[in-house]
Each structure stands twice: as C-alpha cells, then as structure tokens.
Length: 215
Image (tube, rainbow, N blue to C red):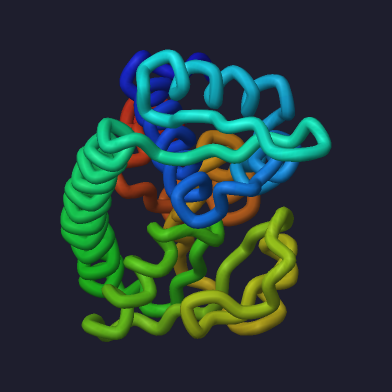
C-alpha cells in the first residue's frame, strides 16, 4: 500500500525526533549505533545526520581515533521541543479518536449479544480496546498476533492464530486492532469467522473494504 504524504511526513518526523533525543543523551554515539537505535539502515542514519548538521540542529566535533561526537545546537533543542509537542498532540488525538471508536464498536457488539471478543493485533489500539472492554459488559478473550513475541499484552494472552484463540474460549466477534497489516488481518478474520463477526474501527481506514465484504 502506497503511503500518503502525511504518513511519510509523520514517519520522517518520528525518526528525526528519535535521532535528536539519542544525540542529546549520548554525544559519543556512532552512526552504526544510531542506526541501531533508530531501527533504520546505516546509510539512512547517515543521511538524517547530514540533514541535521546542514540545518544547524546538530554540530559535529572530531574526537581521537577518527571518531566523532555529536551535540545538539540551541536550534536543535528548539526543534526537538517542537517535534515533541507535535508528537504529544498527535498521540492525544489518536487516543481520543481510538477510545471513542473502540468504545462504540464494543458497545455495539454488547448490544448484539456478542459478549466474548477477541482482538487481532498487538498495538496501542489493542491497549485502548482493552480499556474499553473493562468499561463494558463484554469479556475480552485474547489477542491474535503471529508476529509478536509476547505471551501477554494489555492483560490478555497473545496467540499466533485464530484457531489458538478459539481454544481459549468461544469467540463471538473479532475487533481488528492491527495497525501494520490491517487489510490482511481483516481478510483472515473474515475467512475464519465471517464478515458479520468482524469489526474494524474507522480510523484504520477500511470502511470501503468492509462495505464491499458485506455487500
């Protein structure tokens, strides 16, 4: 799926903020260490560093043995503060939207008598859904996530597939909480449970796909 300009910008700002935080905490960090911290390729880490130096956010000083030390400039501290503020605002907005939409889905399922619910995807959205479950009459059974190494998340057991989830308890409905491979997980859930038992918060952007699956 092609990313929008907004998504690309968000990812870029996230990497930049993380980079500035790492440099602030450890001036002796190497480019390889920085790449590892950021979870990106060495070449990309080098590219971000050069951009920050060019913009005056970071200054570089050579140390013995051909090593370098990186320091935030006053401009760098200002930019870090700005990006932190944007991140906090975006996080709050996400939480508010997620809580409203997950609560709506959970309450709707409860009204339909679907009280034993499974989640599909370990994520912040799953955490929000778990909170909504505590405030409702439904019981959350567990979370399906084949990529997670966790055995528990948000107080729920994590299993590899829907069959394993069925072994825990009878599942009345699935709420999609995966934010990485949302479309694929949605299709897998429908294949296993049927379209009428799978729900997706609107913020995941599958409204058109959902409509087509139920037509």
